[in-house]
Image (cartoon, rainbow, N blue to C red; front, side, top):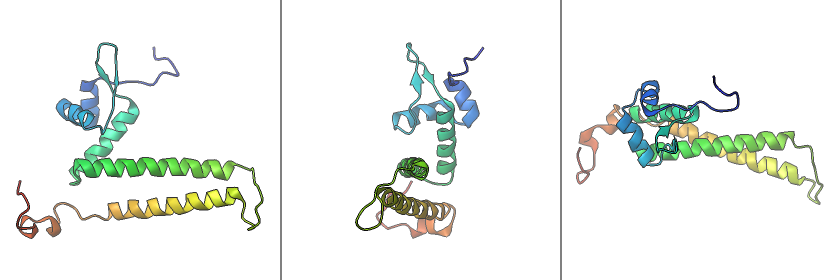
Amino acid sequence: MLKPNKPRLFNVSTTSELTGMHPQTLRNYEKSGLVVPKRTIGGVRRYSSFDIERLNSIRVLTSSGVNIEGVRIILEQREELNILKRQLLAAKNDSIFTSSPSGITVDQYNKMNLLQRLKMMHKLSRSIRLLPHPTSPIFAPDRMLPNAPQE
């Protein structure tokens, strides 16, 4: 029976089935720091539901042609955006206001700053979604730079 406060953890084979990734791919993503599973005392990897969601995001991004470094940047930007959203919600729920000579309260200033940062992150996330698909002509080998290494 599962304890109500204890999150469920999955072993490598179950995580592999849930994500559609080979176990070696999971190990490679751990090695590159994209996912950090918990470990048992014996060193066995245990993946949380958060890890599985993250791995599914990685799978979607890599299948769309984004390389590992691009995936890392996108995931970091998503985490930053989520942090900013939580801060904005906390700021909206905070009812402490202090007055200032300019007429703008510190709380209002902090909210404006968060809103500006959220708008910037939203614009960035929209531009990332607008990247061309890897099968589009822009990625064609004949359009590569002459000295670029060919795979």
